Image 1 (tube, one colour):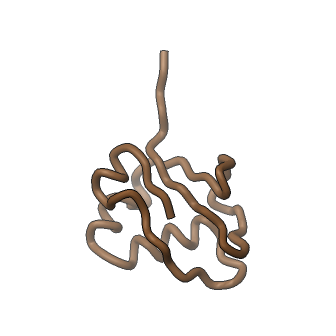
Image 2: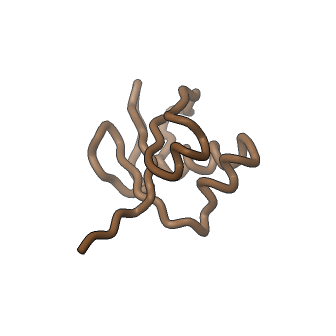
Length: 79
């Protein structure tokens, strides 16, 4: 797991977790939400977050395989 911007400020740079075979990025998010109050606040379902799997933007239905890197970060706006 890697975290960026405000998520990194709340949870740190990242962590390693065990993920069940066939898990999706959304399932990993739910697993993290259940792991602690800080994760629940920061990754809450009501918050808009972007995610990436192996450094490619993805949606939460992406299936995690092997030693994948998952990243969460807030949406970016620009002008």
